Length: 434
Image (cartoon, rainbow, N blue to C red; front, side, top):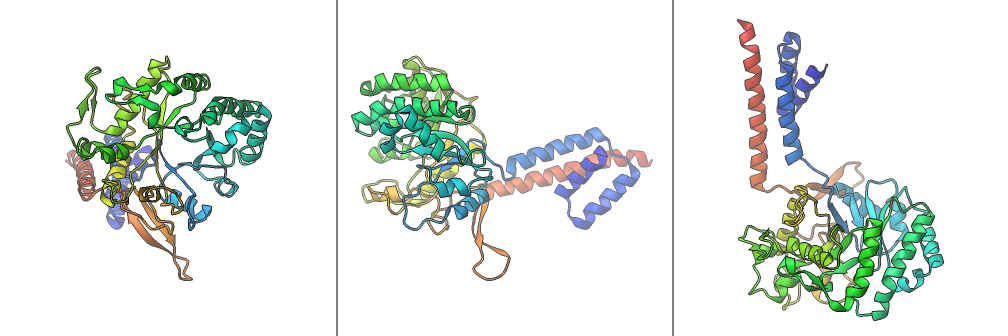
């Protein structure tokens, strides 16, 4: 039966309808196929499917912001994430409508304690009440995997807020322990890259002296709980600040000579990985070398003010497309090549109510109506319900990870597999007919 199953699988992938059935009947009746050769062929086809098919990238997530006046309801957002094969998302609050809607889905969620709540949840009893109210009722139906305590607190400018951070994290974690949830839900906080005093070259990475004291307490907490260090890293900001000195190809993940760290001799072909490794070195300088670094936010704006150099749909598409390709390969950084880098794209939607320069409202992959802001190249088909009364679904927009050359490679590889099948089949059948 194993032999027949292998044959049918191969034929299903390589041949169409009638021809597939005819060949299957011939093979099954003759029983002339060497099972080891079929196993080899199946391995090739499995490799082909894994390399070119629609994959769920385990290390890729997306930020689902809600600072917009016309964003779609959570159920439509969940449909969109499903169509994109994205199974990780971060929200900046504990919106009960989102938490309820995402129940019994395959999407893992990071939820957030807002900055203004840190002084409250410092109190262990208040932290317990917060977790009991905002997390426990939804878990485990909703896959809450982490609580982000605040956002960019170290660089918020509020010295009091920084002092609240670690006690609030300890209290939130203590509440999870008390409720038996600490095995499932981590506690951390996203940090701006500006917590670094030095980031170039990566091996010179160090934290600013004014945050080093509390940073040590924070890193001690992460190490003791096995939680990651989250960084918001935007190579766009570095390029915008010095477009004449920084290679656009280097920040966009395009082919480029890159740079070699003069002290470690590690080669970097993109700025994001260099920024991540700078954080690793900064932690090592404080005595913490085993904490995983993850990217809580990264992205590129598709529109900006006149002085926001590089904020274009083309650059945004290239940056995110190339990053997604890297994620599909489960890459690590040069310093940690065997640890895949977990990344959350910023952001799912353009949010029209965000303050600041024009770019702040134009980081989204999608417009609020669900249309594509630019062709990022995710390997999925985004669909919306037809406006007619028909039960069929019409595609409103589609976009693919593969370029035209990738598609040609896919067809070429498929053809190769099919002809190898025919060749090996002939080798087995023809000698036995004499």
